[in-house]
Amino acid sequence: MTSRTIKLLLADVDGTLVTPEKALTQRTLEAVATLDAAGIAFAITSGRPPRGIESIVAPLRITTPIAAFNGGLFMRPDLSVLSESLLPTDVARVAIDTLADDGLDVWVYCGTEWYVRDKHAAHVEHESQTVRFEPVEVTNFDDVLDRVVKIVGISDDFDAVAKAERHAQEVCGKSASAARSQPYYVDITHPDANKGAVVLRLRDMLGVAVAQIATIGDMPNDVLMFRESGLSIAMGNAGDDVKAAATEVTSSNSEEGFALAVERFVLPRAGG
Image 1 (cartoon, rainbow, N blue to C red):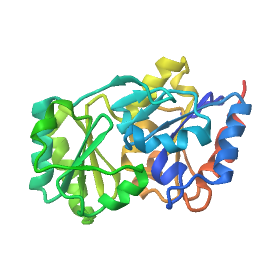
Image 2: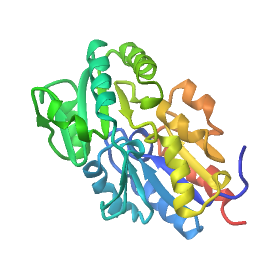
Image 3: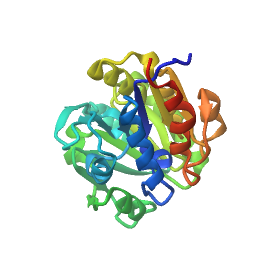
């Protein structure tokens, strides 16, 4: 289903809106400005915590609600909280144990804080640079289990991450949402905290019909928002399964794929 008229574009951040170096290009900024001029609202959703999104809000001149933690936390552009969806304590414990049993390192996010067992483990430094703050190192996560917004399993064994994703889905069932946000990350959040639910929440908040919402992303967790939107666009750097789920495919995030998607697929459906 592709709507003739688009009134909202919802974009993933990493792998989509920013380059592999985590930068916003001038062409991306200009593309977002053209959306506003065409009467199309622009919103973002990301697995990042609020503090990891802060640096891109002002350059993009975002005025819509922002969905951090894949929708686990909705906030205003000034980062004040609109709503938060916590994982039940027992579900958080099971999820952490499941990821660890599958051989993955585990991170836990609670509000504005990020907890790890080892600051020197794989991807911690890279994530710190991306979100622009340091994690808190803990022996275990027992003291924060009652306020968990997101759990991440990490491994450079991509097959192990895919297997852990399936295992977490089986173990948690409908009590949590588990999906890969990168080949080396699997995110576990409240069942209502997924990118499909983000689309529906923004529909209600902004009064835009689902058929008038366009979505763009690159990872399996973005397919959930593809299914709930009138127009879906996969990045060129996405996997074949993600591309197959989208209405359109653009170029990669190292080749101005976001801006090209706006120009080719979104702006022609403005107005009406």
